[in-house]
Image (cartoon, rainbow, N blue to C red; front, side, top):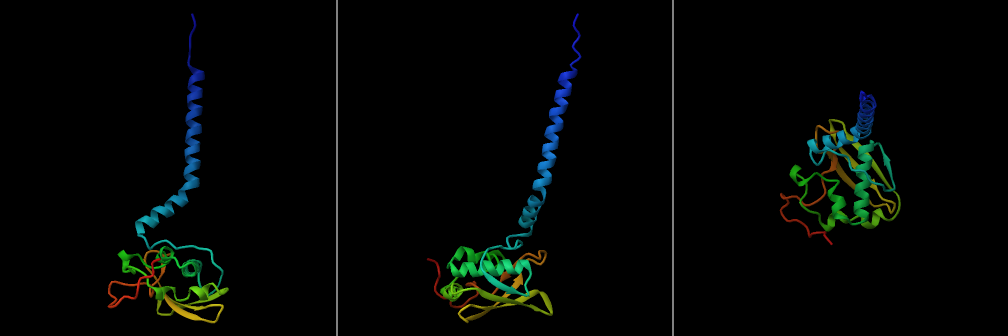
Length: 177
């Protein structure tokens, strides 16, 4: 008479469950922070995340979120990209512009003339407001306003004086290609 205790099968089943559980835990630890940031961005709205781009610029007195915003703005202007410019302004749901005109791309040549210097000047009475003074390599200048688009997110800096807003009486010509 042969008695089968099933011990090897139980041990194998337990080992498979332990390995699968360990892999799930490791995957959660690895993906958790990135996933949580995405969940927060979605819950806080379209203007909660900081845009990040690569563009040569000397940024003075700005934090990393402001620097990313400025780089994205300069790249959008240099490439005359309406879609990239949309990423640096508040969403239309958040009082953002409904379009962009040729005036928003006035400095396309200036941006492409060499390394730009941008100085962020904070508002002493409102930490959610700042001015960006831009000096292009060809000596042209510009001054733009940035604000926190979402008060609950320190990463939501956006340019506020760009684009065509619904309240504009006579919007300038459209800049789409």
